[in-house]
Amino acid sequence: MDKIIEVNGLKKSFGDVHAVKGIDFYVEKGSLFAFLGPNGAGKSTTIDMISTQLKPDGGSVVLNGYTLGKDDDAIRRRIGIVFQDSVLDPLLTVKENLFLRGSLYGMDKAQLKNAVFTAAHTADVMDFYNRPYGKLSGGQRRRADIARALVNTPQILFLDEPTTGLDPQTRHRVWDTITRLQKEHSMTIFLTTHYMEEAARADYITIMDHGKILAKGTPAQLKEQHTKDVLKMTPKDEAALADCLEKNGITFEKTGGDLVVRLDHTIDAVDIIDCCREMVAGLEVRRGTMDDVFLNITGEKVRD
Image (cartoon, rainbow, N blue to C red; front, top):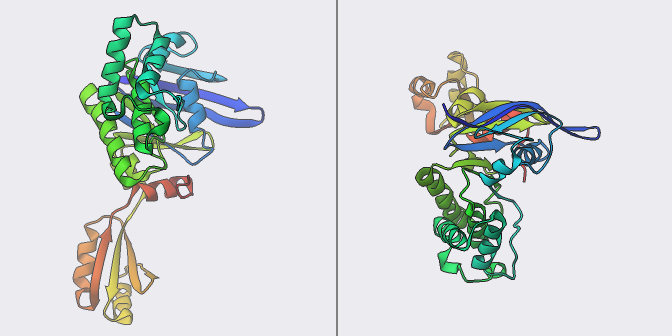
């Protein structure tokens, strides 16, 4: 296990508001790491500290061997950040924005030209490379934002809700870019999102709320620990099906004309269906989702 980010006892308060309360977690090198939580959970404050934008009150962060508060310049050279709100100039072309960004890293002319060209191709922005940023579509802007964050060839890319407000087709295109970065360039992706289907793509997930870490694990582990599968049956005769379930000691709920059974294990649905087959007109087995995980852990639905 190669840890590229290690966070221990990280704290931050703003007056009487304890935004981050001594959290611990790590991120493996080359992974897609999802950092989830409701608004106000402390996610942005945590990211701002890790990325050297905000000074912690306590705790430690080590990023690829560099210590926060001691090696901040080295950390900044190794990360890229795609903010939720763009920081590019709408009047400049994508090319001009990328060269402006690259000039901040002290590269010579040849290095800068190569860095910008590589970032533009990697983020797939060449089709609109010479167009003003302000004239681009939402999806094109996000890809340009990603290109900006790649100019310094970062080892870790922070993505703060990169697809919020985009239509499904555009979100898919942006995710193609993100996936390619991780797989082809072995880049570590640190993601925050309110779309749980995106979080389900992650190699590992950490969920926080009220400044504390509430749960950690792979998507499969979190679903196993915090959700139940559901068997939904549409009865031919509701009274007969209810009687059958009761006689077999099976707890159920009535929902919109269906009888719903929460399963400890998916395979349990087979025995239930077998014993009540003649009373069932239709059925559906639904696996637990990341939305269920989020709701069960935080007590809240995902909110934008």
